[in-house]
Image (tube, rainbow, N blue to C red):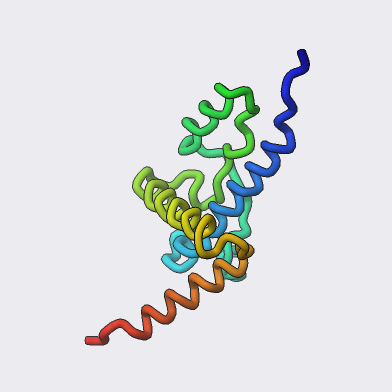
Length: 132
């Protein structure tokens, strides 16, 4: 019996993982100056290298248990690879919220359009906030 070929699935999973983390890092880390990578700050979007991270250890283990290589979700943006556990948990919650949006009202929207929509909403909330 031939082993199942997970290479296409892992490739899609890796692309989705990278896109989700870059979108969250762009929304949170660039704006808060958490990201220290010069090219990301210059372009105002997460575009730095993806690096392996201990934060992803449990995900890698889960993927290996079902027969995948574990490399699809092993890397995080450089600013998150060595981030504190609290910072990682915060961005993990942001990713969960973004996934809810992408599965709901923004289902057929590209990542760049989602970024623009969220940034416009954030600007609108900032303008409507009471000034003291």
